[in-house]
Length: 291
Image 1 (cartoon, rainbow, N blue to C red):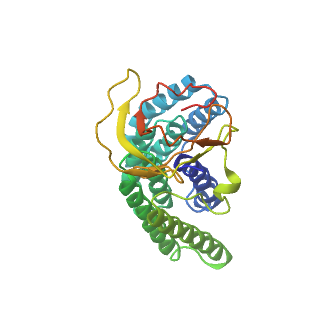
Image 2: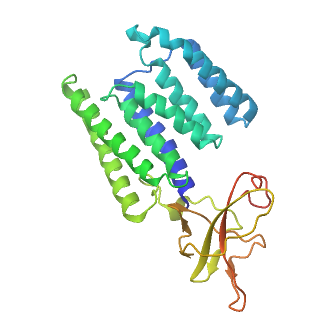
Image 3: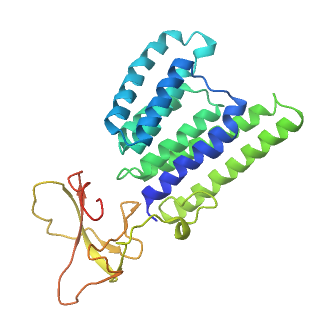
């Protein structure tokens, strides 16, 4: 399972287990009905793969959110804009625009108070997006660390407000989330890439297609990046060797596919091979596997 697949699992896990699981029970949603309706329409458009409609609703929500700035003095609507941006960011992420998702989440984390669990969730989601952007792995770890700190502050503050069985439940859920965050950060920094969330091991949750394959070769020289589209000349020097066991490039993990649908690819020793990274979207409709 690669970095994107693990981050996709984290995005779903964070929303279901943390946000819906206990955060909204303690800090109810800040969205008014009109905003909720637009968010639900945006989600439905994505669910039924009406991509253009989903983007259109996302942009409309962003414009709608600008009107909330004048209402920040009203306590009831104080955090409506950052929560709405968080919902837009999740859609942008699932539509494949990582930078848009990161920017939307940046607005959210800058608007929620330090002890807000929403802030913790937004930091974690932003880290998931940053893990997949080249040369942003340090930023991803920093976002996750900030998410962990925000969750700790949220947990500590709730001790002053909640009592009895409800307080124990909240503290239990917070402690579990804090533990999961800590383990995730430890694994990511130790191995250089994010692991899947709890109870979702990569070997059993992989969504690889029948075209997944394994390279029988120790290493390949890596010549950096080239833009998608018109071909350009390769660089004349190697940036280093890439171990094909993990196919780790610039902090991201990549799958190996064989378009002949054979489970093994054996490179001939009599031929010189090299590896380059294509930057762009010109092959995102390739068959049989989208690249």
